[in-house]
Length: 242
Image 1: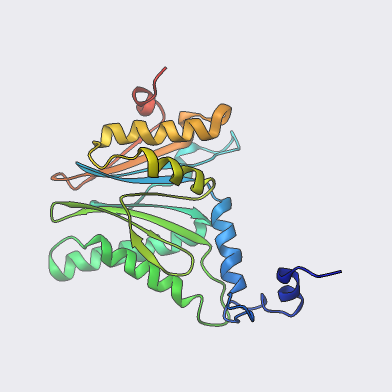
Image 2 (image 1 turned 180 degrees about the vertical axis):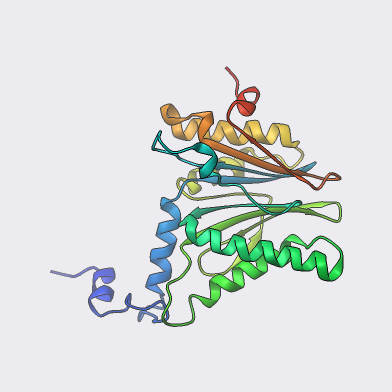
């Protein structure tokens, strides 16, 4: 009986360390971390004509948990918002470092940091943990949006430390289904208000009977204002059609 290739690799110990390549050129620990990201709750990011928007599913399953403690929208600086999918405790470490970087930039240069500088630092940190022994990769993917010099930006960083700019993207559970909808229905000229309706409709179609407004966090930064605005719970009712 032929043994599947993945089982052969595990038996030979190629998944024992994040720095060990398998014979066919894979870092198996990194690939396992990518699977962890796909088990995480979903988030959608959109670049709208008047700013950048992130809608995140908190996926709270225990009614005893206070919703305020399960926030998935992170404020890096007042003009930069982020969310993550995967192991959120890993994300918290990277968010803390990103916040320090943003404040150091304000103190040193007297100006807000560019979003690309933040995502590059996060991506560099994640890449380091795929290259050095004794530590596992960060099991988290980031969506980071921000406004700088009159333009809105959205970036995604994966487990490997790669990052790209997007017009719209999704991370976490059902990300490929969401991306299919984004590719076909996303319009670059939609305002933030319409973008919120659009993202919540996607979640409603995918989640079906499990859809509840209480499980979503929304954060956006508008051009000209450059200040993070958060919405959740009853504040989202007006964006859902009856």
